[in-house]
Length: 251
Image (cartoon, rainbow, N blue to C red; front, side, top):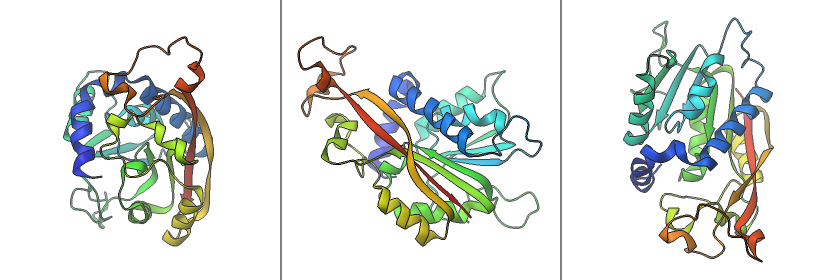
């Protein structure tokens, strides 16, 4: 991510969990993961090690904690990681989540914990990332990074909205464009990146559709997002459906 992204997310960390779109996307991402990754089962005696890249305040990490042996929740925003750390200090918080404030660029990054057997850096059985890739400048490098961070047989299941054309820009209001590197994912591009990185069993498909309120014209919300959709003749222009893609691959 860029410094612009960090600046924005640091400022929004305290109120991040209050955003209904964030809550909706997290709930849908959890359902997507549980449907597609058999090892994410409460009955699994050998629960997987999970890496959550761009974890934010840990909403998805915490939701996944019952299905994991351990979770490394990584985010470059100090504000987001501080919010997660505050949650984990609660007496009833999950004990298998480790927060890490870092911008990983290599599978051998010194910030990554060492493996239990002392043989290099920890590798992960499942890597997840939700609503992160549209903030990443160099997406092929990110996909290559996830491959390097996986244990043999491990899987990535990454989710973000799809670029279906010029209208995809409306996913973000104009005053939230700082740090947005692309207006969603292009399916064909993601399929090529998976292949080039070396993934097998790769697939890019629509996992769910989010209906969200959008600006009717650029900059409408600069004074603050309206709490309710206006009841007027062009009300349909206030709402828009966005495909969310799931990007899957196995090492």
